View 1: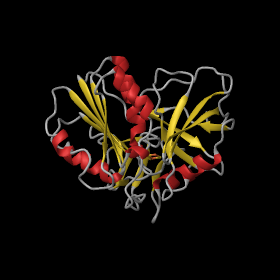
View 2: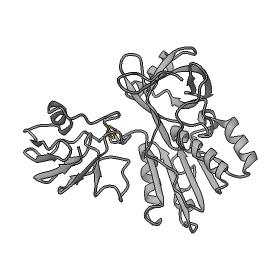
View 3: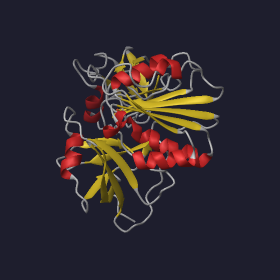
View 4: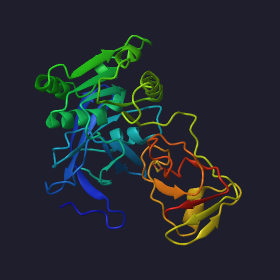
Length: 326
Ligand code: FES
């Protein structure tokens, strides 16, 4: 088996294939050096990719979770991004080894649904394509709507056409040619919710907002989403200065200093909270809390989780004291 990194339990994987999927989008197939099985994953999972130069970025796995020999990520070369996708496109070559985390999932398919509606905006297709493979295997009816500017920038066409052969009508494309309102009419498509149906969507910030608004009347707990990019205005939030933080496991009691950052304060006191995106997107830093109030600024926690968990990388303690399960 490919040896994990001794200190961080990372996997050293081989870049076995790089494929042109659409203009600006390449897929990267990663597999074990010795062709062994990889740790399993479920649809909606992502991995952290540790890039040359120290950058760490999260990418959704887009292949069929039934495949145990490879992880496939689809990466859009984003010239206006933070540099990670550019580094992936320019630095990773076939035959390289790359360190990645084990898969984690904050965007799970839900058990018990009678059907699933998957709506992708642009590169948000990646987790939803994996979900489509899983739903097909499970025999759960689904529709995958892929919204993109044009066919030239729509990825995975061959695989989605194959999916359509296996489940006729399951994959549908909506091209707007850059004109607002010319693509999928979300309001109409989401106007009624079939009994037992769940909705999953992923895409850029404006698309996410439009989907959430169009599905606002759906039954609570049946709408699921994953942001791959935080809205531009999102800033890591500082906790309330002077708040007392009690740690259950270590018994420590810390007072947050003026201008203090909770993660920094914890680290300075020897308490390690794993982090990855530090943008409220990945859930790596998810921490349990009690006896206090939090302003949630993440993009992943469900309403049912927010009363007991928060993401200290972006969320803010608003009470004078709080207890953390650390
Ligand atoms: S580190 Fe990703 S949500 Fe906090």
